[in-house]
Image (cartoon, rainbow, N blue to C red; front, side, top):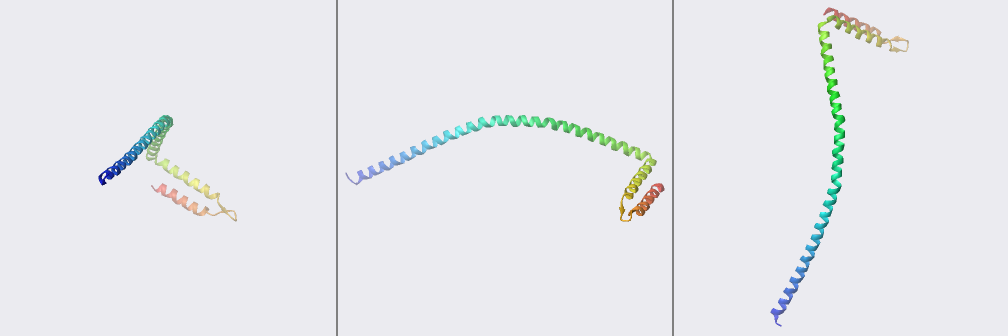
Length: 142
């Protein structure tokens, strides 16, 4: 055998090793693809019930939210009606404004009497009286 025959044997052996390596890689890749398929199938089987549970939960939560939304709208409508009625009443009745001012002043005076300092005297009695008197005077001058 000459040098050409030896080179051919070496080349054939190298090709055989390369073919075996490629076959091994393809077999491993096939197994990985099979495992991925099984994993995807498993995930799909587990995810479907979870999605159904989430959908049910969302439906159950949305029911009370719609009720709360309706109640909120009703309260908003009632408060706007009360506000409009009150402002209309007070705009038409100046006397009512003066009475409301007097009631607020009386409430402030009463609150001031409850605060005492060491000697039993109210610390804000004089100031509250002056404020109340000026508030009532301002209301009367309008």
